[in-house]
Image 1 (cartoon, rainbow, N blue to C red):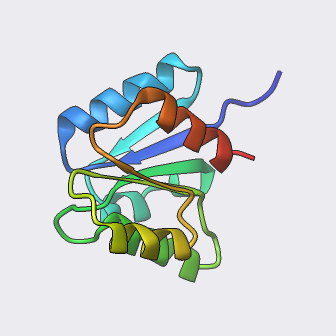
Image 2: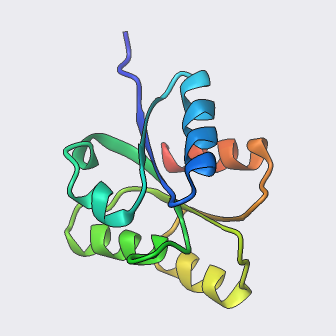
Length: 121
């Protein structure tokens, strides 16, 4: 039996965090939620995460900074950034930095699932 993939969700908004985590679990993934990039980085779940979904704008570390820290550590995780503040320049910078997808809230569930599928390839 194949091991379930872990999706980690990092968002300072509890309702968004819970909604995405619930969706991931309903689709058969193991899902773990974190309120900040710092809490994710200090977690032992970091090493078992197959895909990271992170909010772009959070107090402290942004989602793009989190992605950069992971890449700099030599252990990058395929990352999907979500944002309520869409900015085409930031989107271009994120994609250039290796982010798999950059989705504006509210996003369609199918868009997110397509991004996850790309991230897990």
